[in-house]
Length: 163
Ligand code: PNS
Figure 1 (tube, rainbow, N blue to C red):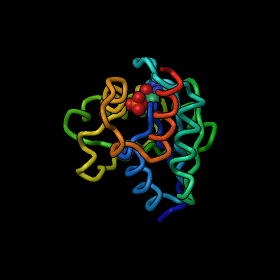
Figure 2 (cartoon, rainbow, N blue to C red):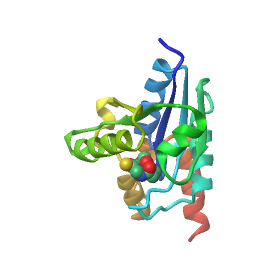
Figure 3 (cartoon, rainbow, N blue to C red):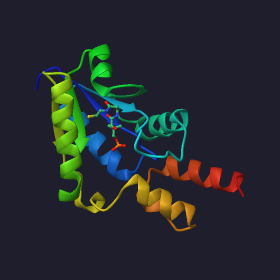
């Protein structure tokens, strides 16, 4: 495999086991994976950027060739900054496809040599999303099996602090 640094961008609000599954798969393919946490202007975030970065750092700390970073602005500008051309995104189901396809083609329009590689998570995560985790958590449901242990602990701690 070539010496390729891949960027896995997302809002990760919060990081889920599905995200970690994709990161582990990517880490086996690429020489380095940079998990790039950012703001999605189409979403209202539950956690601050700093919190999402710190939750993600804790969740992936045992994976050797993975780094966690953050950026603001366009993804293609961030790619330029770190000298990468490769974006990794997870594709769970057909319902993800239209949005992901549009984003991949738009990123390629903005920066010609960009490649988006789609990875498919284990099927046990195909139903899982940060938004469902947020909803279950905010309604007092059990979301323990859907997020990394450290994320669960942090969310429970915050929930208690906010009572
Ligand atoms: O986890 P998400 O929220 O689905 O990730 C979407 C994200 C953050 C990767 C996307 O919104 C993004 O790349 N935002 C950065 C701004 C940007 O480059 N927008 C143009 C994308 S075509």
